[in-house]
Image (cartoon, rainbow, N blue to C red):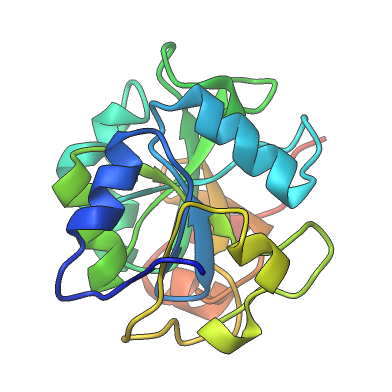
Length: 212
């Protein structure tokens, strides 16, 4: 029987994170499969659980702006400008990872995708464990992600250490939008999602095509 952790008391889930274990937890968009970004073994386990190819890094969530520099290096002022408009919320920004960041969250260029989650449970998990978390959707690669406990793959649930299943549930719909800052108030949208282009434009950001 899988252990279910209720949101009023996340002590057991936090302990699992600190001990380098893998959990499933809610975010503002979908359920996430996660672990501490300091646990390389757990990161490898998540890659295997998802069947995720090695060249596709795992995204990261933070519980506050104070945790950003635990993930990335040389934070440009443009990052703070963009984050003021959309964080906490479903906008993931691709930034240069710290040199000591685990390989599972970095692409071949040393970049990682990070967002400040607006979900209270996910925030508390990050803050109480004192570390940002891997925040990839809780599904096997190619399968549908879940926004309700009943839609989670039972085989996946049975292979993780803890499931945080209590409300508030994720709202579902589109995943986070993924962008990369390419200039002063200019971004490339790498994945369309919950933050639409119109909202980026309304916040004063120009959306441009990826340079080839």
